[in-house]
Length: 515
Image 1: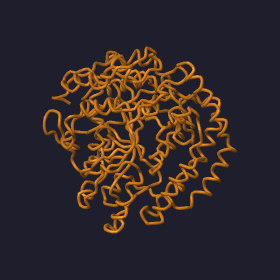
Image 2: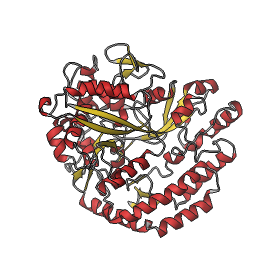
Image 3: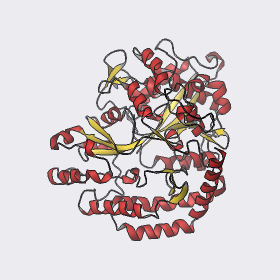
Image 4: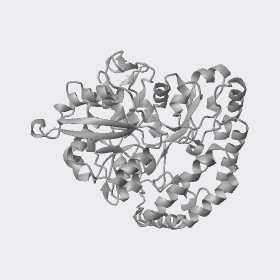
């Protein structure tokens, strides 16, 4: 699971952020293929307040009222209807639209959206799962003209690297969340358990380093899973190939680029993956992993919240301590394990697309513009209603109300994260955290490469189905991985994996030659 992540101090915050994400200079004049540092612009909104927010693109009285549907991961929250009501009242004078928030639980939300796309269902905005695959097959509306006309403020402030990463075959198919440039993977530990047993989480430099901790939890906490897994979250978050990059955009096809050789390979047909899966099998046999890890539907945050687990894992960002503390409703400690990497995939990490079936793409783009520039709307959507879902401690700091019925729409999903209120437990140095995070990021050597899967769409569909068939079993540790890998690789080869690798390699070679 990808994890979650006004106005008082907002003016100083947004003035400072121009330095936050534009402070690093590039060494190339090739803007098209430049690293984010070379094309950096401010990624935050113009200074606004509760009484002076981003203006609508067209006069509201000239617009007919429409309802927009928005599909996001998480929840579903029991009190989302009251938040919709507040948002709709606010939007009346902005863009004369109402919003229907559809929350898709982490029980395979991508599959649910794919069914909507395949059936031609009419809807407006959606968080992008399998972005490049869906963009290549025409699921999303092209946005470049809509952006120019209805979201000029967003276009002016967003880092161009984000828009470059969301462009496929010359068309912009999504608007990325304005957040950190790079991603890392790591853990969020229950601070009470860490303190209780004196665990040194900073000593963790590789996945194997958590094994002594798992042993302690197994012996001392019989009601707690030392390493909790579910059917959507497993240790496949932690790559066995740190000097590589996933290029196909599906998150399911085993095609990685080796940075040393610039060659694409099948990650499931290597000694490294076999050793990793053998380690997981060893932990399963030792009783560290829950027996139903391949099928359990408990979300990681709920497992930690209930005491069923003591840590979660996945993508981390500069404010993950706050994000996971909010989700688990208890203090959490973050430890990232892999270097922060800025790549096309990280820039595509959370984006909103407008469906090609949308009846109101113009109004949808107006809404997207507002969540990038209007702190009132943004905080309504991500925090809910003051006094009901959170308490305001000062002009820019809030405290969540436990079990309020609304806490699953996180800032990392949409809009501009720096419009967010500060949680009382959050580090007030948010701007500096983002600045440090980006300054310490490692830029991919192939930043800007976007794979066009048009020629191998049929193979990709078959390969995704095969990988899904085997991945949970492999990463849950339930069975000996060696024969399973052999069987899976045989099926992948028969389904056309070599053709996909060849196509990616051909496009990569052309990309490198043009640099």
